[in-house]
Length: 311
Ligand SMILES: [Zn+2]
Ligand SMILES: [Zn+2]
Image 1 (cartoon, rainbow, N blue to C red):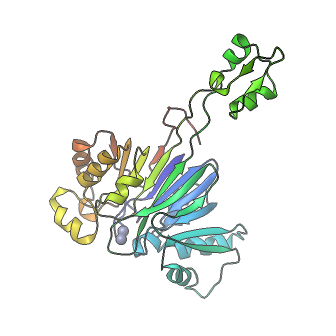
Image 2 (tube, rainbow, N blue to C red):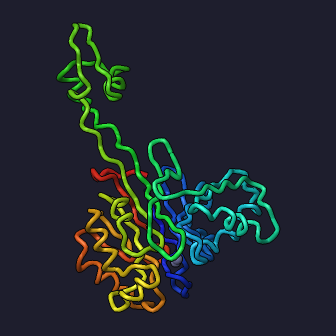
Image 3 (cartoon, helix red, strand yellow):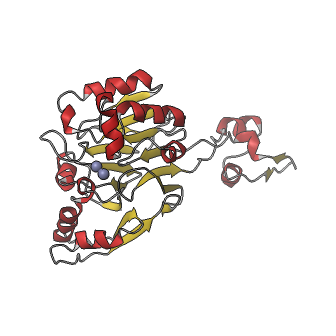
């Protein structure tokens, strides 16, 4: 999985940072998490590709959705035919529809708007799910977790062939799929003899705007990457609480409690323009894993927990 930070600013854009948007590419599919104003131009700037199949909206504050009308209009100009699904918190379908048709134009490709509540599976992708979870902001809001299924254990070909004398062939895939196999001499080989334990999939979690909250801890258990609201530094902790946001340190505490491996701080207030390293430092002081504060256009690769690369 590859994550591109398209917009890392909180509330309003700056010359250096666009409002919220994160692109996740997974095995050729593109998912967009929020779409602040100018998101389509960021996609061009950072060459992420344009063929997004699912948009996941955390909440309907302008800095998270005002990029949608422009993006959809451009898809329309480009004669897009493929459908797109927009996942959005329960009760906001009408406003998303209004946003899409605000120019009086109905897109010529299908746009499905899917309302989700915490606990719902927004997208069932077969070997992975995108689940909505509870966040705590001053609006109806959800976060999203991409959760991959466990992968099959490693197949020990050498042992199968040399120790157990199984010829390469259909028996290999049977064993790898968990079935036992009977050899010509009557010996029965169990899958455990040649297949290692299941290998965990990846988990990438996007909070959108939120105060520190239990819902995030639960969603981000053992996450490979947690992308968390870090609007403020500790000097504005009170302000963070009042506005439904988190400080970088609070994000780090949540990441620790969840046991997340990596933390990406985002939605940075304009007051820290040019000194965002301060937020990174405050998070690093408490976070046991690796904390980063990405700039617009920064990319993170998310390898499998066993270290294996993968799209
Ligand atoms: Zn926001
Ligand atoms: Zn907000």
